[in-house]
Image (cartoon, rainbow, N blue to C red; front, side):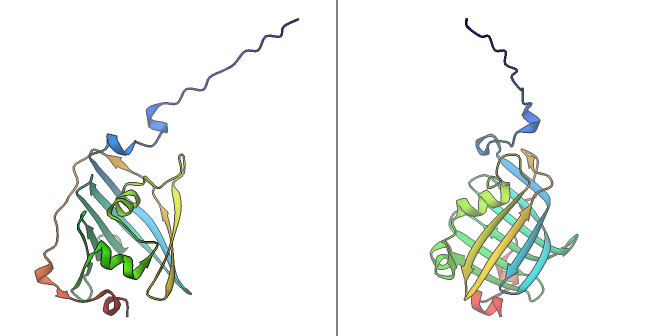
Length: 172
């Protein structure tokens, strides 16, 4: 005698899945939470990510909502790190950045972090670990909301308004 089985198929609406990267030209994450541990020191900040796919990624780092203290602007060719508290700017090529940070960071890595592509499906948190300048850095990122194909403010800062420094000087 042959047995019969019935199956129920679960349907998943588009709202329940994460947008595929190729579907999004612009991505805005207004209030990600970043917890960073460097050796024994821990910091928590709010980070707003603005991305135009394959062109520009902006990380706005705020300890107090609305007050940007640090900014990272990344293009496929370079990374600019701005410290607004000291009005300094650190320009880095990805080759230079890889001499400071291990594993090496590429534009695609920064873009994946800023758009939430690094998130495991169905999750809102992820961990990243790097070693640089003699310190181990562990980042826990939480993404409460990811907006796809919305207008994003991609106004870049002018490095001419900031004093140019090296990454070692900035990290002191």
